[in-house]
Length: 264
Length: 333
Image (cartoon, rainbow over all chains, first blue to last red; front, top):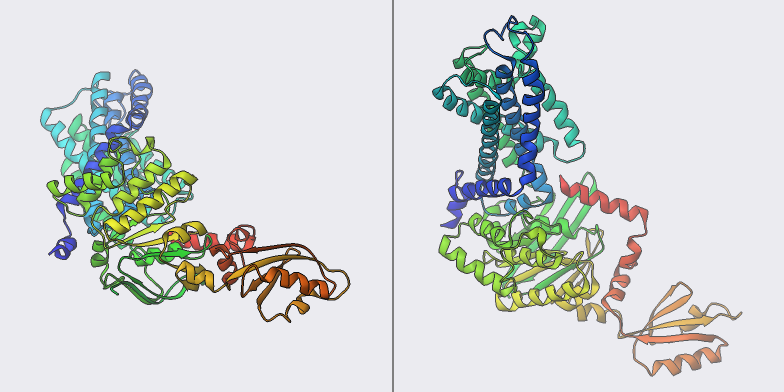
């Protein structure tokens, strides 16, 4: 009876448990919440706001909107990128220093464990992203529409899921902690800078544009921009298609690697 | 006797380094069985294989009758483990950690509540369950981990260096709880340790592990008896009468002579009455005994006898440290 239960791939109770733990930890470590919101706040207040005082309305991709409006979705994307990658990658932490070790000897399917944990990470990342949207509005960003806002939540979840999978892949393949942070920064920062979060893709030369097309975050940021403020480089259907495919691919690969992360 | 663990030539290699070397043993139901050995001897690696988080390179093992590679989930269902390094969420309270564990083992709400209260009571943790783990003392944290280890009614509980880093009082305290668990809940316990007195005090049977091999196995009493009944430590002012060792070999009741740091260690058949005999014998040969002491062998002496080194010496040797490090980092992957 119980042995059959063990082999279930989607096992609701452990999924819920892992999710609950992520939530409890998130709410309990106040410093981390504040820390995760400060950096985006600085970007918006000290980069977005001053830049929007400059006469930049002729730049392709910025027509008819302020730089602050343009930047806000980019910063939301940045939050999702960092939070998602870290949530996926911190699996390695847990495996070395604690908690996950205990979970790994429990008779629970690996996929359920990682699904619950990722859902928890995605929930907290989305909450952070929504707080950033709130801050942006308080700074004077004009949202396009209510329906756009709800669509944006969907984009947030997809973006976050994709990068959680990405973080997982790095964590399981890298295996140990040494040099881990350095490699993370080496990968994550270029993804952020080349995503069009800070400058419009339309005004770049074609060689740079092609690099930006490869960057997965480009589509997340563009989708957010399209839904939140109604300005985007690509049609929304394209952003969604790319994000959904990425999400499926990376999340599947990530959880596959994780479930293979068995005794060897 | 019901067999809970049966291993056959269990072996684990990491990049050519043999961490566990053809270990064959049986552990019966209700036993407290100890792996005694220095750091890096392969104890933890052996435990990791038995609790299914590491696959053996060769050989096989059955835990609770299930194969550790092919029937992983069944094995996991019947074991509990307390890891060597802290593996408890310090951001959560003790009770939250226990609840979490219970859910992972599919306990329903009612069972969970009862069982958590039960283990808290048994470990004397009632009243501390709502403290955050990070605010608890080392000993209390460890007790929460032990409580979690047997929460799911395991037949077998692994304790990997359970008292490492605890002060003497907390250590003795934990020993009593381990005994209690063994008696009250009838749980078979596998313990790894490098503390002699821990193995001596707690374990029904001990396997001395050195460089991945079982050097000796038996009850602490049996192991100590191998040493002969008693030991005499002797210092001799040598003079110029030749080697005292050669002379001493003439005495039939001396079973073994070890020379160490200017003193001689004799394993003898007999007790106090041998002291005057020895002094007479030395007098006749012109040997001057400057000090003599008789003592009963401890497990430490047994360890020394089998491995040729004390557990403390181990820490001094660069090669051993390096090998221990290899073993540990190998395990990490």
